Amino acid sequence: MSTTPAPQDSILSGPPLDSEPGLGTLTLPGFLREVTEQYGDREALVARTPADITRWSYTDLWERSVEVARALHAIGLGKDGRVGVLMTNRPEWISAVFGTALAGGVAVTLSTFSTPAELDQLLQTSGVSVLLFEQRVLTRDFAQVLTELEPRLGTAAPGALRSARYPFLRHLATVGDAGPAVDTWAEFLARGHGERPESIQATAATVRPSDPAVLFFSSGSTSTPKGILSAHRGVAIQLWRFRRMYGFTPEDEVRGWSANGFFWSGNFALALGATLACGGSLVLQPTFDPAEALQLMQAERVNFPFAWPHQWEQLAGAPGWDRADLSSMRFVDARSPFAQHPTVTSRWTEPNHAYGNTETFTITTSFPADTPEEVHAGSNGVPLPGVTIKIADPGTGAVPARGESGEICVKAPTLMLGYIGIPRDETLDADGFFHTGDGGYLDADGRLFWVGRLTDIIKTGGANVSPVEVDEALAAYPGVKLARTVGVPHETLGEVVVACVVAHDGVVLDGERIRAFLRERLASYKVPRHVLPFAEDDFALTGNAKIKAAELRALAAQRLTT
Image (cartoon, rainbow, N blue to C red; front, top):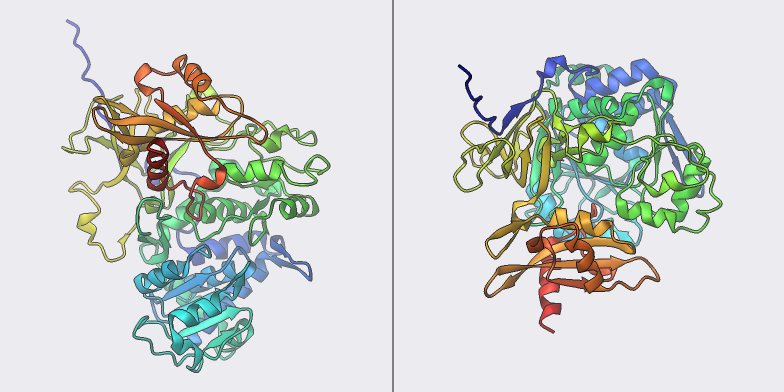
C-alpha cells in the first residue's frame, strides 16, 4: 500500500557550522593575527591622496592596530568599552576598529553621511566613551558639528570632557585639525607609548567569540536607525565566509576596491573581509567619485571592484570610461557594465543570489560565485552552515507548507546579541528566531525567494503584489534606468500599484507602452495602474543607497492628486 508523503513545511536548516571549510579563529583579534601570520609582508591596503601614497603590509596593519590599542589602554578603556569610529574608508578606520578589538573594546561604526541630528542620536544611543573621527569629509567639518552639539568641546582639555548630553564620552581624537578638547591622531597614538605591546597581546588573548565586538547601525530606510550589537563569532564567521563564497585564494592576488563605507556591515564583511582573508590588498577610496575611481582602479590594477548598482552606472558614464584600461578586472560580475567594457574579458558571476540582514551581520542564505542559473533559479540561495530559515504567517506565527509565502525568520550563529535599548525577548520569538520583516518563501529544493519588505507588499483589491517582482519586469524595458513600484492608497481597492520610473539620458518613456509590455509578463492585477516619470534625484536614499520607500510613496500619491 502506498502512502502520500507529508508535505514539506517551511522550516529548513543548513549543514552544521563545524562542517564549514575555511573558518579560522572566531574573534577579530584572532582574524587579524592569522592573516598577519600567513601574509606578513604582502600588501594589505593602499590609500592614495594627491600628496601621498600610503601602503601597509599585513605586518604594518597589525602594528598600527596595536598602536591604537595601546593608546586606548593608556586613556583607560576597559573591557567592553565602546569606541566610536567616524571615518571614511582610510587606513586609520581599519586600524581603529581592529585596535579596539585588540584592546578588548567594542567598535561603534558611525556613518559619515550622518546629519548633525542623526549623529547626535547615534552618540547618545551608543554610549561611546572614546570617539575617533575624521575632521573633514567633503564639505563637512565634524569638529565643528560636534562642538555645536556639545559646546564644552570648545573649552575642555583633552580627556577632561564631562558632558550631560553624552555622559560616557571622555576622549576624542581626530585625523585632521584638533580643537581644544581633541587630540590629533599623532597625539592620541603617543599616549600609548608607555604601554607595553605584550599587554595588548595578553588583552587580545582574553577576547572570546561570544564577547561583543561591534555595534553597527541599521540604515534607517523605514525608521530611526537601530543599534545592532554583534559578537566576535558572528563577525569573524562572515569575514572568513565571504572568502569561500567568492572563491578567493592567495594565488588570486585580489586587489579589492570599494568607496562604500565600511561602517555598513555588508561592505565590512564582504569588501574588507573577503579581501583580507585571502591575503589581498584593499584599494581605498574615501568617498565615491567615478572619474577618480577609474583612475585609481587603473593605477592600482584593481581586479575586484565592489560597487552598488547606481555606482556602476556612474562609472560607465564617467569621463575617460571609453579610454580606460580595465584589463586587470577578473572578479567583476558578467552582468555589470564593467563586463561590457572592451578591455574586460571576465565572465565570472558574483555570489549575489543571497539574503541577509545587518542583524545577522549579512548573509544567511547564498550560492557561491559562478553558480549556474539552473541551480540558483533566480533565488536568494540556500541556508548556510548553522543557519535555520523559517517562514511564518506574520499574523499567527503558523508555519505554512513549502512554497507558500510568509515572513522570513532566521536563527544563525551570526545573529546579533541584540538591539541597544530593546530587551532580547522583544526581538526573538519563543523558539529563538529573529523575525526579519521580509516576505518570502522556500521552494521544494530548499531555495529561499525574497519577495520584499512586508510593509512594502501592495494589497490591491484583495490581492498581494510584490513590488520586487514588478521592478524586475520593469528593468527589462528598454530605456528604464531605475524603477521602484509602490502602493498608493485607493478608496475602493485599498491600494493601487504605481510604478515610479527613471529614464536613461535622452530617453522619453511612454507609460501606456510600458503597461502593455508588463501585461505580457505579469498577471493583470500586478500591472501598475499608473506609470509616473521621475528624476533620479527624486528617489530619496539612505546613506547606503536604499530607497526610502515611504517618502517615494508619499511623493507618488502627491503627484497623482495634482
